[in-house]
Amino acid sequence: MRNLRFLIPALAVLAAAPAARADFAGCIAGLKQAAIRSGVAPALAERALALKEPNEKVLELSAVQPEFKTPIWDYMAFLVDEERVRDGRALLQRHARVLAEAERRYGVDRHIVVAVWGVESNYGREMGEHFLPHALATLACAGGRRANFWRSELLAALALVQRGDFALERLRGSWAGAFGQTQFMPSVYRRLAVDFDGDGRRDLIASVPDALASTANYLGRAKWQTGAPWMIEVKVPPGYAGPQGRRNRLPLAGWAARGILRADGKPLGAGPPAGLLLPAGAAGPAFLVFANFDAIYAYNHAESYALAIAHLADRIQGLPGFRTPWPTDDPGLSRAERLQLQKLLIARGHLQGEADGKIGEQSRAAIRAAERALGWPETGRAGQKIFRALGGR
Image (cartoon, rainbow, N blue to C red):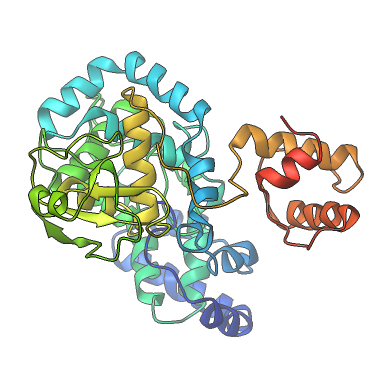
C-alpha cells in the first residue's frame, strides 16, 4: 500500500506549502490536543509531535506517484528483476510453514503474499525512513482536500504505539504513512493486522509471520477467491481494436472468439470471466485478468502495481517472463543495471558521490550530461541505450 491512492495533487501541495510553514506550530498544537482526546497519552503525543517545521521532502514526494508517471517497461524492469525473483523463491522456502498456515487460514495464494512483500519493502529490507508522525503531520497541516485523511492516519498511528504494538521510534515508513514489511497504512493496520507469531502484539515491522499473515488477511478481505487464477499472458490479433479493460469482463470463450490465444499460442481453454489489459497498447504484452487481480489492485489502486505483483508471483512459482516484448527500442533497467549505470556515470565524471541504484534528480542530471556528451537528445532517462553506450553489460 506504499504511496497508496490518496495522492495530493501536485499543484495543491505546492500552493499550500507556504501556508503550512507559517502556521505549522499552531497546526501541530491542534494535532497534539486531538491525539490526547483520542486516548493517546499526553507524554506520547508530546514526544511524537515535537516538530518545528514541515518535512519538505514529503511535500516533494507527494507530487509524484511512480505507478502513474513511469513508463510501464521501466516500472516492471525495476520491480520484477532476477534478484527479486531469486530472493522471493528463497524466502518462500525459508518461511514455508508460516506461509502454508496463512494460506490455509485466509485462502490467499502464498506466491502472491510473497510478491507483495517483495514489491512493498524488498522483503523487509527497505521499509521507508520517514518518521511517520512528522510525515503525516506535514500532510495534514499542508491543507488540501485530503487533510482530514492524513490527520486520521496520524491519530491511528499513535494509537498503535499507545496500545503497545511497537515503540514510537520504530514508526518509520513511506512519505504517505505506509509502514512495516508489507506497508500498511495505520488505519488498515489497526483494522486488519494480526498477531500470527503468538507474542501478544501485532508487529508488522519486526515480525515476518505477523506481516505475511496480515497481508493474506487483507487480500482475503478484498474478496480473494481461493484456488482461482489471477492473470494469464495472452496474444491479441494484429490490429486488435476490440473490448478491453480490467472491469470489462467476458467469458474466456468470448475472448477466444475474438482471436485471443495464450501467449504460447495455445487455446485459452476454460476459466472464469476475465478482463483484457493492454498496458502498452495492442503491440505490447497483453493479459487476461481475473477477479483475484482486483484483490491485488485493492492493495494499491494502480493497474501497473497489480501487474507487477501478479507477474512477480508468477515468476516466483517458476513461470517465465513475458513472451511479448514491450513496444520500445529502449527497455528499462533492473536494479543491478541501475547501480552499474551510476558507477559508469561516476567514472566519467558526470555524477558525484556513491552509487546506490536509486535514480533521483542527480542521476537524471548526470544522464542528461552523458547524453549531451554523446550528442543525443537530453532525456535524463535510465534506459538500456545509455547503459550500453557507456559500457554497461
